Each structure stands twice: as C-alpha cells, then as structure tokens.
Image 1 (cartoon, rainbow, N blue to C red):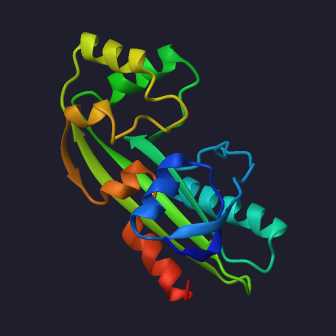
Image 2 (image 1 turned 180 degrees about the horizontal axis):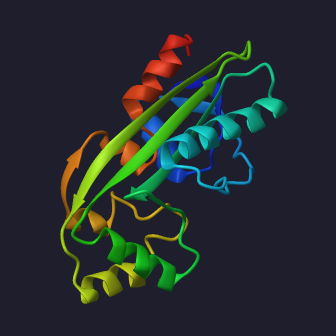
Length: 189
C-alpha cells in the first residue's frame, strides 16, 4: 500500500482501516485535540460540520503546508445528538432511545489542502433498528463495544439488530468513503 500525501486528523482505528480499504494510507496520523461540546441549541448537521472543520483546522495549525483530512460522526435520534457514552448506564439509555426506531448517523469529512483551501462533504445515513429487549440491551452494554465510539459500532454485535440502512455504511462506521475519496482525488492526493 502506497503512502498518500495527507495527514489524518484522527486516531480512530475504524477510520484508518477504512482508508486502507481504499488504498489510502496517510503519511502521518495526528489526532486533533479539540473541545467537542455542542453550542447552545446547536443542531446535529451544523455541529458535525463544525467539528470536522475544527479538527482539520487544529491539525493544519501544526502542519500548515500539508493536506489535512478530518472527520466527525454523530448518531442522532430525533433532534438529540448522542455523544460517546461516559458509562454503562448512559449507553443503556442510548440503546433504549434507538430501540425500535429510525435514527440517523451523520458524518462530515473535511480536507484542508496545502494552500489552505477548505473542502467539505457531509453524508447522512438512515438506520432502522429492531425493538431491543432489555436482555439484548444489557448484553450489548456488557460487551463494551460502545466504549470510545459515538452510539455503537455498526461493524460489531449491533449489526444483528439493524434492519435497514439507507445511505453510507462506511459513514456509519466513521468515514464516508465515497465522499472522502472524491475530496482527496479532487485535490490530487
């Protein structure tokens, strides 16, 4: 696999694996350390776009003459953004919210090129989940798969509870590959 001319502003193993899937190995991985708090009354779409841009800008400050790729992904139930659960009880409440309902996973990918030009794409995917029994919720929470991710890992145990996906599977995993590839190729990376 050839190393490509960009820095990934993320330490996510899922994002790294997805990039490798399309033969895009970043020359450096440099996670952005930013405040990911929502602004008062901020809705999901502006939030996820702002986070992806903020991550790209943060890493671009360190590497001003490099192509920098960043991404942010959130799970949204109704208008509620589900951030990374801090503990098992919070994850259990998230699972109850999603149980038997449709929800969205929104991923925004942002590229700042070597000249400072910003390009951004945002992808929304609709997920239908079966009604989860209390035992299924407890089993999923006990698995610990949810730790460190927003809502859940679609590529893990939860896949057995998803009845329908309309949109980008890779976006749900954490990086919409089609949008990402278009951004990178558009800049000659």
